[in-house]
Length: 175
Image (cartoon, rainbow, N blue to C red; front, side):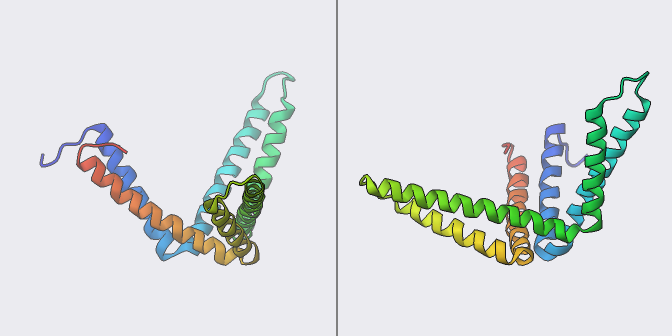
């Protein structure tokens, strides 16, 4: 045998290859990849809801769990909604991220102003607030393009991480 890998090395290489493949998919076809991931998540919700329903039906003698029924209904509902409109779901999560960035940017701006009043000037905090606010506004007003941009950034990160992971495993170090 030319190469011998330990189980840890095999999983390390596998993780690196999967990250590289995900990175390439996100870089070269971000829209398709995002919709595919949304459909995968929808399928997982539907399967989870179906299993909760089966578990509910198989429960013995009047010991029905209302929480399990609620879980079944919510999981099936979310799964079907995401499966019906994966692009809208991606846009929804981008808008949630935009709101998060806007709130974070506002909090950083208020913190900068409060610190400035007591004589502490932190220009890094000021610049961070401007970047977060700008990022949030772009995502809020252009969620689909923002989602594609995020997918591209995550794709580049995944590609670099996968390559670094393979190099790390090959050199005998772990990440």
